[in-house]
Length: 411
Image (cartoon, rainbow, N blue to C red; front, side, top):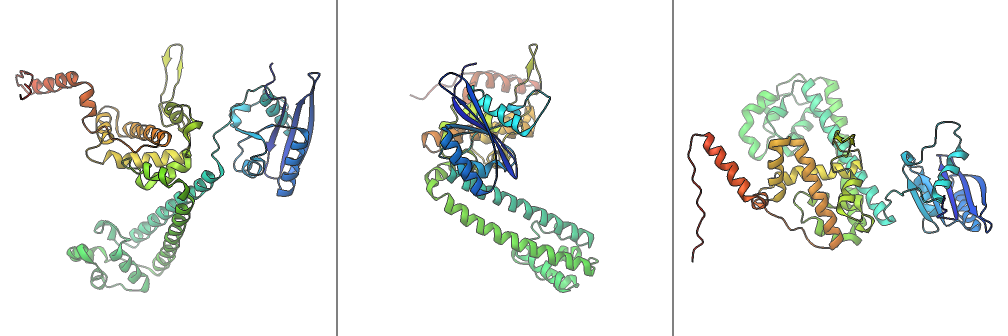
């Protein structure tokens, strides 16, 4: 096979050590292999970089193994052309498997140009990505704590959730704090309602007449403390995100012009990066993110078209944005959702809207232009004759006779 990279190395990365196989093609066309093992401590990884440089290595490849590849990547980045490859793409033929053989196989595939690198954004985007993912984790932790509070109230026969839409608003928190403090009188607890909730005081008195035990108060005290801590953490990480996203402020502003994306602009930027040159087309960007129908065809028959796993952080952000956009009146996304939900179901419709939002994100980041909405009448303008025939058939099924006449434009 043709040699593409004459001086390359394959790395088999583990938590405690890295096995390295270096393949160098000499002037006579012979391949010289060298094998070394380094620990993953910073000093040893720097020594690894020095040895690869002294050997004349130009290209390095490693598997994406959990988070173990990250410190190796961070210390080798900028010194070599590095490829992070999916373990699925470097599987060997079943048989004898060792750390050395794995590294040698990666190096051999790299030398012949048979490896495709995964997308790894530059360092500033990786920093922003770490922060946005941490924020997502904190928000999910908050949701879990809130759900536990609901369960404790139900166990104590406090039906506050049946009356108040948000038990953690100003009124709800005051009532919960009073319950933790030992208050049991439903009249006193209901009187803590504020603003519009005052109109539901009679219902609140019934809902707050429960059987609160000492362990319920302890659980509520603990959960409310966790919730307060998590809320403070979210505020802090938001500040850190704003600071990390400052160099990309123009791109964030452009992304916020898309319906449903405003609160998720930094997350989309962190997952996709600011430069769309890594994706040759919007279709390839959608394929990488797995926000598109899967392709499964054999023998001329098409199988399941369900989406692949892809980037779960990006898919979650796009799906959340799609739900918001689908409920935004007078937009293309809302029209697309209604059109597809009636035929294909809500979930498939949301995936389609998320796909449309991703395509918009791609073009906005690539071209540096704000979002231009096609409007809710876009699909009607695409096929006016077909729409007219459909509406006529619906009227005829109601027993009406319909005659169509073209409108005459005013002079």
